[in-house]
Image (cartoon, rainbow, N blue to C red; front, side, top):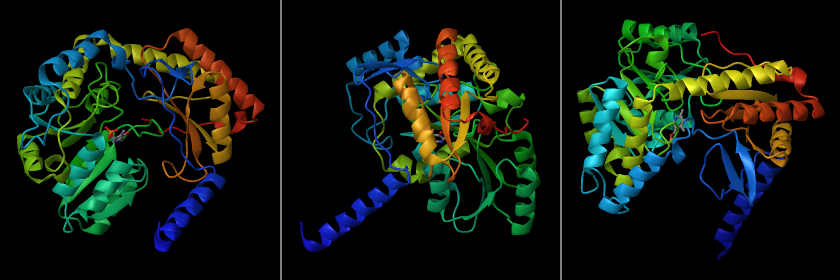
Amino acid sequence: MNDSSSSAMQRLEDELALLEKAHLRREIRSIESASATSVVFHGKKLLMLASNNYLNLTVHPSVKEAAQNAISKFGSGSGGARLTTGGSVLHEELEKQFARFKKTESALLFNTGYMANTGTLSALCGPEDFIFSDALNHASIIDGCKLSRAKTIVYQHIDWRDLEEKIKNSGAKRGLIVSDAVFSMDGDLAPLLELSRLARRYGLLLMLDEAHALGVLGKTGRGIEEHFGTENLVDISVCTLSKALASEGGCVCGSKILTEFLKNKARSFIFSSSFSASVAASALEALRVLNESPTISEKLKNNVRFFCDALTQRSIPVQTKSAIVPLIIGDEEKAVRVANLLFERNIWVSAIRYPTVEKGTARIRIAINAAHSFSELKYAAEQISNVFLSENLKKQSTIETEAQ
Ligand SMILES: *Cc1c(COP(=O)(O)O)cnc(C)c1O
């Protein structure tokens, strides 16, 4: 190493030390099993309460088999981007089924949900456009706004009155409103009807990120429109295959013109090799399972209700409209300690900290799985309650959820 590179590395080391000191340094924990209702880590079995694998389809026999069969037929890597050599009939079929499931004219796959958001926003908007973005939107939306170089105006979380003020004051003529459908770290919902009304009134497109809505919201898991009993209010619905669908990738659902445009303009679609056919196959089968077992989504809702009730009975009042239950701790160090104490009790939860959430709002983010048993959820609620009691946290743990 020469002098300048060693001083550059010294700076990185210093920054890491600062993160460490602020309890913000992150680490990877590598599991030794499938990601399901429980996982194996360092030879120990832990109850998994942090995964977005909401429907447990990661270990569904027909989903695994579909991926295996696709590997037998199509091999491993795709070998190229969709527009060159990397597109298979399975990718095409998955788009067809996605559009049908979401009741849109068309759908276009991206390699990740992150790339779906950055690619879509940067293709649709430029310096002449306005993007109105909820204050708690996912990082991939924030990055998409930056990449687009559009005039981005952040409105207060869920506050459509603030949004309308800001639209009026901006004089925006062209652009879009973008929001998480289910907010990933709070579990609350976008005010769909109001957002749609404002989008129409001011001639803006409405884009919703349904990463935590697909498979979760609505009677049959179709997402936010099914939850609110509407159709066609959302112009651009961004879904992920990486959460309830137990695979990898993102999918943008909307009109045929939208997907044709993105195919030609979205750089994250154009300049990245496609995920392999086996990834499409497992998502396709997961979508089929979701379609044909409408009760799977009901089962998830029952589990969420059971878990929230169990915590509430133990003086930790919580409720949620999604499958995400945030337990706000506040202090970063305390959140990490709570997560570690639960880890010692064989429960895997995540301590969510800055920059994922604002400083001073660190939390334990719990995600419920449809295949958790009531006894597992009861055990978790008991242990959380014990840890909260020992850490003197009960009084602080009230969560304010927006009435939806
Ligand atoms: C996870 C997530 C994404 C990114 O999806 P990946 O497929 O994991 O890249 C985008 N938006 C939201 C709200 C998410 O929670």
